[in-house]
Each structure stands twice: as structure tokens, then as C-alpha cells.
Image (cartoon, rainbow, N blue to C red; front, top):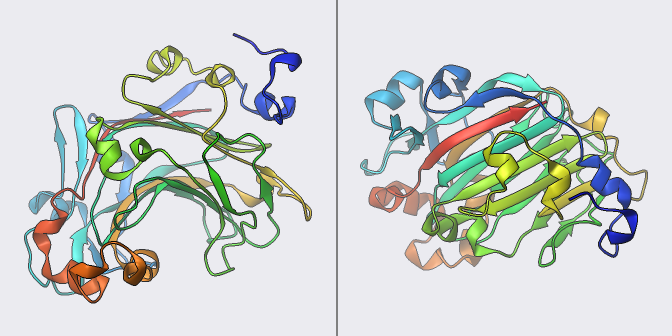
Length: 316
């Protein structure tokens, strides 16, 4: 149902809703038929300094870190090796295709969980952070709700006049060079991340990247709109986004300039500059003196640290 100006929620601009009303065409589907052929395996040192060894496709296959199972894509980690040299084996996959704006819909049945983990589904462009980064799903350790974050070079300030109740804007300056914080919206539903997400069979995230801003929606399993299921997404009908990022004060944000040529990424790292740095203040701290010691000495703790992906669909 189309909304008239008089029916828009209080505090919501017509511009915000119109920004999400583009007509889209399906251009890419990544699923059990092609996923590993459409993504490249990152094997360099983890930029976030995690206790991780990102392995090649051949190594991941040999060690059962990836597979197609029951028409789903499995991306796992090593949960058998005690004290692995160089870090615990995992995979970081980057889409071969790069995009400039669009609608990205990910149907995910299971995500990595557990103390020491730092899973993320995100996008980024070349020469980070000058081409931007959008973190759609991200969190660490025993975190129970999702953190949605943008990172840019200096000069991007956002506001979120249209995020769902219960969310909290942690920061509005997206400058990644400011302690790597970026601009972030924390969410409140335990069903959109971690063990709560997995307990209900996962769900579907949709991220719209447009000239006016970035918008993220989430639906639990069984509540996915019909238009999404039938591959004819109508963002106008989805209502209030879970998180909204639009240009704010102090010059705002030019989304055309700050975000460009971005690739999709799935990864699972351990500890590092986030999960490791907050270990002491987390509910995991009683398990080991440091995150790295826990990740090194407790392989069995990471049996649930896997992605199970039904599909990722890209609309332009």
C-alpha cells in the first residue's frame, strides 16, 4: 500500500521513504549453484589483526571449512586443532563483482557465534576507507544484537530520522580513521544476531545503498515479505528500516562520493582489534585471561562458528 504524506510516521520525511522506492531488477544470485565460483578467497594477513589464518579454497575444501549442504552454502572454521600456528583456520570470501549502489538481500540460516568470534557480512571498496564500507551484520564474542556500521574517509556525518524504535545511534561521524569507530546503529532484537538468530532459523537482511543514504531491514524466518520471496522487491512496502543512514549536520554525507565500487564479503575472524580489545569487559572474560589464549586452546568452542547461507541476491 502506498503511503500518502499524511500517513507517514511522525518524524519521518517523505524523502526518506521515496529514497527506498526505486524499481529494481535482479542481476545476480549467489547460492549453492555458484557461490564459490563467484567469490575470491582472501589469504593475506587479517587487517584487523585477528588470531586467524585465512586459507585458500583448496585448503578450505580439504579441511571441510566449506561445502554445499542441502542446497545451502556452508562457511566454517577449524574447530579441531589445538594451538594452531599462525591462527585458527577460517575463510574470508570477497565477491568477484563490485557494485555502485543497489539492493542486496541475504537469506541466512545460521551465523557464527561464540566467545572469541568476530563474524561479519559487509561491503567495502578499494583503497579503504576512501571508497567506503557498509557492515550489514557484525558483532563479537557473546554479543546478542546486531551492530550496523558505515566507515568512510573524513567528511561524512549521518543522522537516522527513520530507524526503528529500540535502535540506538552510537556515533554519527563515519570517519574510519577516528579509532576505526565509524557511524553505527546498535539494534535491540536478540533474533537479528547470534544465538537468538540461529535459534529461529535465521532470517533475511536487505540493504539498500542509494544516493540519499543506506537503509537496512531485517525479517525473521516466516515474516519475510511476499515481494521479497517472489523476487520483486518493493522497498516502499517494507515500512521503517531497522537502520537508516542519511546525510546529517556538519556538511552531511555525499553517498555518491563516499561509497563506490564495493564488493560483498563474508568472513569469520577471532579476537583482533574488536573481539580481543573488549574481551576483558565481556561476559567471556572468565574463560581465559585473553581472547587469543581462549581461541588458541579451545578448538571445540568454535563448532558453531559457521555461516549457512541460502542465497544472496543483488538488484540494480
